[in-house]
Length: 385
Image 1 (tube, rainbow, N blue to C red):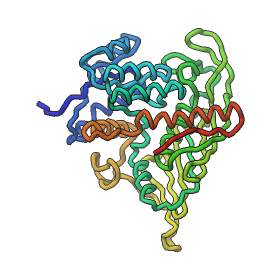
Image 2: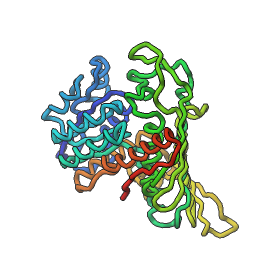
Image 3: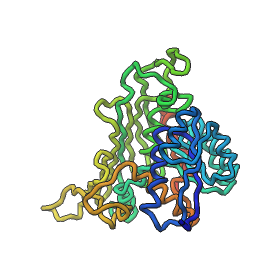
Image 4: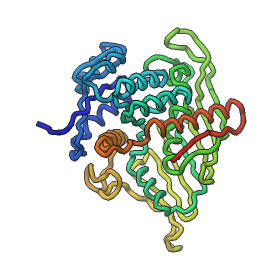
């Protein structure tokens, strides 16, 4: 019989992210056995009973609900995990915090800064643990980048560039709205690639390189009208299909970012590169366990980009998995975030990014959209520590 303290999870949502989070909860105790808390899959909630019942059976949840308010009202729930469309994040998170529940929320934090600010206020007033699932921070190679940057090995940083390219919305016959396609509905999503894809790039960038001060952006919606699954009628598309922006960071470096769902041949090309005074780093999600590094201090005859396979036990998180030379995947990043959240409950330190961090990312996203709409530079008002 385990003597670990139970963390009773109430998961809201039953889509892709609900699956990744559930897998993280189920795996964490096996691979991080020293943690004093153990997740218990108490209840999952979704609107369609047949669907949520099957999800509960598949993933081992003890029960299910069809109304998120019922989850929050239950006395046997310690933490509410929000895996729902963006328009529901704010009301669920605020209600959960006011009920004294810990809150874990999928990214982005909300559709707008105006929605996000009360969420931050609610969790801070209640004093409840909170985190936002920007999982790419937990890729071992990306965490290693953080360690190298923080060591000062790159020297003064001049450039940060990142892109996130997909191709799944190119067909004009693809509808908008509904369970699977809410990301194309501006009322549900708030924005398109900016809040969905660039939010990841922005969170990682500020974590690695500090606050983004101002932005200049352009967006495009290539298909102007789509049939809405809710009404069956063709209506205007309100989200951005593609976005490019450049920026100044607080440290004086320049940033260049691009995201699109119209890059034929790319399913999830997420890359980043940092150029510093002494060295450079680059990473590609398609080869997520590999980090490329250039050090100008190397002897000239052997100076060049080196490839670092991030699988050794002294590299971030890798001592928890297999043997050196064998890789891990996308799903492990969620296990790492669960582990970090559980560890934060022991130490009392926040599990970053928390809601306040995610608010700063939201500010950049909103400034990007505002800049594109006004065709002008916009200050982000970001306060990054």
